[in-house]
Image 1 (tube, rainbow, N blue to C red):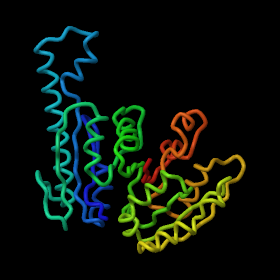
Image 2 (cartoon, rainbow, N blue to C red):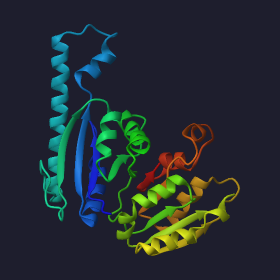
Image 3 (cartoon, helix red, strand yellow):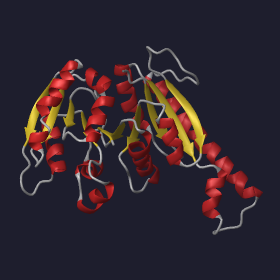
Image 4 (tube, rainbow, N blue to C red):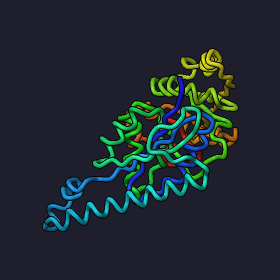
Length: 286
């Protein structure tokens, strides 16, 4: 299995630079194509929210359409400038499979259905850590995790020079973590170092990290198992992030929302802690 198609969704006024940097650093290791998808609501979606606020006429529709066109042009120009700075070919159609290049597409509609369909024909979706001030970021992460069915890479505040220098896997034997491993073997195979961290919880004896290391070895991935004690007063999420920092992890990988999302919202959980606090890139699957 190869990871050849990396999707970077973006929208009006969204700065995709950090995600493009991450995509490029992965793309050059994986020989992957970077697909930038600009997603903006069409006039009908904007008007639906304005209907009760102001009268709508042809001038309003034209102004909305013009605003979307200008935002798309600005976004495309920013991506082209990034490509020029980084020496990345910018193409409108597929290039050679042994090179990394970027493409640009413009999609009209709501983020959720657009990203769902686009993500399903890509290998990895790269999103920002949600920012409450930028609704697009939260919507993109939610859609990527719950609707796409592909791994999601959430970019935090920093993008390591080599994202695959040391991948730390938070393993708990869950269905979500299993899906992530199965879908990310090609990425793990390219990692310089892999460590499997297994938190000592009530199900510790059922899901041994050594078993996962043995499985990975069959796929040419040499991994080290580390048992992580969880002390009173410290959540599993806190303990995992602290261990990832201690290990010098360049990327953290885990199954997302093993418990229901409502339960995590009410009681807290590992995924919620990562979304709120992780600074390094986090690879997730639900």
